Image (tube, rainbow, N blue to C red; front, side, top):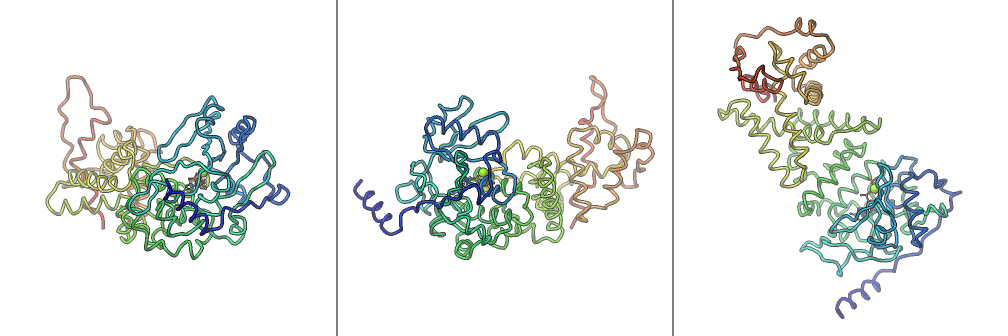
Amino acid sequence: MIKKFIRRVLRLGSTPGPAAPVVIPVKKHGIRREALSNAARRTCDGLHQAGFQAYVVGGAVRDLLLGLKPKDYDVATDAHPEQVHRVFRRSRLIGRRFKLVHVMFGDETVEVSTFRAPGGSEHAVDEHGRVLRDNVFGTREEDAERRDFTLNALYYDPHTESVLDFQNGLADMRKKLVRIIGNPNERYREDPVRMLRAVRFAAKTGFAIEARTKAPIRALAELIGNVPPARLFDEMLKLLLSGHAREAIQQLRREGLHHGLLPMLDVILEQPMGERFVSLALEQTDLRVSQEKSVSPAFLFATLLWHEVLSGAKTLQDKGERPMAALNIAMDEVLARQTDKIAIPRRYTAVMKEIWACQPRYEQRSGRRPFALLASERFRAGYDFLVLRAASGEVDAELAQWWERFQETDEDGRAAILVAPTTGERKPRRRRRRKSGAATAEGSSGANEDAGGVAGGTQ
Ligand code: ATP
Ligand code: MG
């Protein structure tokens, strides 16, 4: 107890206490409360009426100041999680390491967190200084101090429409800088994910990472390895869906942050074919985000890991494994290696495997098989994947064009463009009919074993 008290006094003594905020009135920043989402406004109003403080914080304020549309809203309050929960009928308590409340209005969810004190010796930490639990509540000023970057520590008060700036965030935004709050070394040790976040915000805003903020990253990059895989997945997904994935991945690489993260990202980016494929996939994703179209995380992760699967399959084939078996084994091996570091949820890995496994089926353009493939549920995703493979030069562009025609034309047109089986390609085995009747679309997937396999045609 006494030790803790002394440490606390020393800590407060060695650094100046949290500063009072600079208050920026609406006429200077121009953000009216109507600019907030309905849910964010109602969450702040509800808390305010119940006698609590409530501010929009974090990314939403940053994005509004930059003239961008916020993706989601975070609210900070002096109400404790249980108190927040009591104010809103449609809300739920979440999180272990960090207790939060999700408040729902319609289909929008606002994340409400209670003011926290900065991490430090009072918090449970692992042997590298990573904070394991972070539920020490604090004042509004302390809450601003424990945030990651100055541009994320701006508080918008919907009641007065003013912005409170505790950490010189506005000045840094004007200078186009991502600057960490406090001592960068300590802050990254407390939470190594902040290194990824620095890159994400720099890529998203086009700002530079300020020199002191950047300096320790290379040396501390390996601490990312201690972050729980589920958390890494969440942060990676945010980065990939930021609308600036291509730039962010390049920057991760420049900062030496890609090693061991998506373990083979470095290898992939260094293979000429793989790099082109990944770049095209990321560009396409960024474009879709900018057009507010949906993006499939499974498709995206399937593209990131594809060349790793391919080279695994090739090695196995060189050792005498049959093409489809080689592909299947390689898929499982790659996923096992990845999910050890970054927990891609099973609902995504299942789709990734389907996308990969159906690729050889696009090489078969004779008989009934193309019809069965077209009717299958994963046709579209598999086809989009094939288009990317063609665009990157991995497979013949003609193959993707053929499938485009095959989709667009009618039944007769499809029959007309079927390709005669080439010599060497085995005739489709006659399926032994089950008593129950005709083969279904999925039933034809047994034909995969006849395929030349994807690995043969690459690198
Ligand atoms: P986005 O626009 O992607 O949601 P964001 O800045 O809102 O970006 P969130 O992950 O939603 O990011 O976090 C909300 C806020 O919580 C951040 O702006 C930051 O102030 C604070 N925060 C989040 N993660 C951390 C962290 N690891 N360390 C310190 N503060 C954090
Ligand atoms: Mg946010």
